[in-house]
Image (cartoon, rainbow, N blue to C red; front, side, top):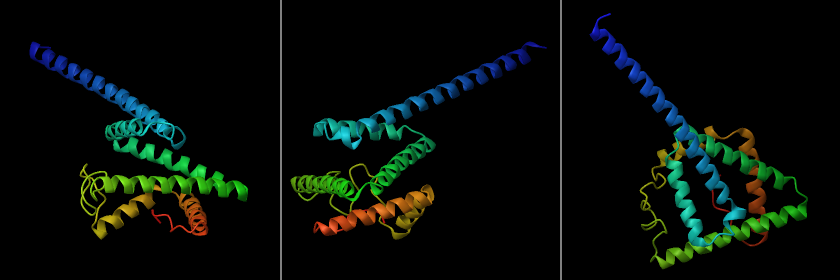
Length: 196
């Protein structure tokens, strides 16, 4: 074998070794990022988040957003799927509770939802009618990633949400939303805004 062929073989071997190292590092970083997102999500779970001061909660949420952006699309999908499954299991649990406990849970959720709505309205008034993310209603938020306003884009997103959910998740969510809205009506409140 002449020297030129040996050099080419050595160069190819080095490139393959570097590619392998980069691939292994990427997998390691991806697992680290996913673990960081999971830890932040646990800290921001409703039970824990309520105990935190508002400023700390906002900072943790910003960290979660940054960490989520570092995940691959597949990891984000996996993370959202885990959150949907957890939420579905919680809704199933509530649906199986005795009526009195069920109403107590719904009342607690409604109270928290109304408190969030009031805080949002107060922040909006404090910002001179601007949304807390920046910009007046109907304009993109400060991060530039507002939901699409084009009907075709909205329909496309709705189809994507349906594709990502299971029939069981949709059935449980529908039953839970009906129960929640029935309770809101009993309390003299409008239906809960949200996806149908």
